[in-house]
Structure formats: structure tokens, C-alpha cells
Amino acid sequence: MIFNPTPFESYTFKDKSIWIKRDDLISEDFSGNKARKFEYFLSIDFPNIKKIVSYGSNQSNAMYSLSVLAKMKNWEFIYFCDHIPTFLKQNPVGNYKYALQNGMQIFTTNNKSYEAYAQKNKDTLIIEEGGRQKESEYGLKKLALELKNDILKNSISNPYIFLPSGTGITALYLQKYLSFQVYTCSTVGSDEYLKKQWNMVEDGAKKVPEILNSKKKYHYGKLYFEGYKIWQELKEELDVEFDLLYDPIGWIKLLENIDKLKGTLVYIHQGGLKGNESMKARYERKYDKIDF
Image (cartoon, rainbow, N blue to C red):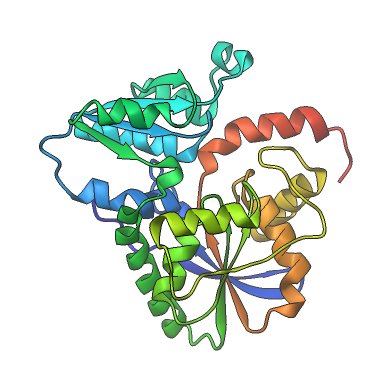
């Protein structure tokens, strides 16, 4: 499968001129950075592989995309996570629901058990959490080339890239292939966690993205009023829907730092909108009675 270049669009938000790389439009099943990270596995034949094994959260975007990949390749898909809430088991929704429909077998265990399982099965392909592996470079290098062409075509002077990070692999490989600065922020763990992820795939990288911070500490998966508010503002003002897990924290940290950043902002929209089905329900239960 070859993905076509995605739109590159100009917007204004809070009186700031920005460009957005619309990777959310690349594919319904391989939304945003998952299309880029898994393009290698979609493009290459693996005649001896019969199973995919991976690990992550119970509403992971990668989990859903891998379930589609496995279905396309006629492979088994075995997925491990640390827990599945009883409510979710009884009321499947979002990525969890659709991955199950694609034939995913899911088990709760610690994050080392899946490696032991896969090592015992030589016909098994291990996909690290969130696509944190060297093979992701294949598709992300192509994204970097697209960005170079987009920026040149639109005569953008002094551009800089921003995108929020889970494992941070997208930001890392973009910085590897782009001459201009890539900024990111942690959304899953600490900044040290992010650097550790980078070292797992590119130990001793010559140049890494710059990490932006916030005055407030945000915890992964927790609901924040200001995050829901900015998500709604972006949707109303730009007519663009962003992911509800990573993007709100990304925009909060970006806007706290934006006056210190020189040049023209290019925001990478990494998709993940299928996960909004479950996240939006959580936010609505908590905040929908509040007058924004």
C-alpha cells in the first residue's frame, strides 16, 4: 500500500498564522502517524509470518491499525495490555471495539510477557508499543520529504515543526531528515521517558527534537477541562477535529511557548480520531454541563 501525499493547509488560530499538515486525512484505518509508522509493514511481503504481537493501552490507535494490517495480511493479531476496565469489556467502544471486530485476541499482562511469547513463535512479528522501532523510519522519511516539498511550494520562510509525542518516534525521525527545528512535548511520561524512547531506536542521534514544557504537569489519559476547551475551540474556529488524547496537551504546551518560538509554525496533525469516540464520551460525562 502506497499512501498519497496529504494536504498542507493554512489557518489562523488565536491571531497566529499556522500551517497544518493534514495527516489525519491519509487513511481511515491507518490514521496519521500510524500510516507512516506501519507503511514499511504494509509495503513489504513477509512470507514466513503468520502472527503479529504487540503491546500498549486498551484504546491505542496503533492497536486498531495493527488489527487492520493483520486482517489485510491474513495474520493472527495478539495484543497485550496491562488492564481492561470492566466497563469497557461490557461496553466495547472506540479502537478497542473495532480491533475486536477485526479479530484481535487481547490479553492482560505485563509489558515483558509479549516479548517472551513472540520469541517462542518464530512465525511472529513483534511490533513495539506505538510503533517504536527502526522500521518506522521508512514512512517517516517520506513524510519529511513531503514537508520539504510543501514548505518550498508555499514559500514558507523560517518554518518550524511542532507535534505532541507519545513515544516520540515521529518527531525524532522528522528531525533526522529536516534541516529546520522540530519541537515536541511529552504527553505520556516525563521528558526523560521521551529521551529514553529515542535512545531505543537511535542511540546517539546527532540531533533530536526540542521538548517544550508547561507550568502544569499533565498525566496521560486524565481529563482536563482546559484540554477539552481548546479542543472545542480548534474545532469551531478551524473546522478541524483533533485527537482528544494527545493534541489538547500538545496545543496547551505549544501556546504557552509560542511567543518564544521564531518563525512560521507547521503543526503535524497525526490523526487518531477513532479514539475520540471513547474520549469524547468521557469528557461529555464530566464537562458537558459547563458553559464554555
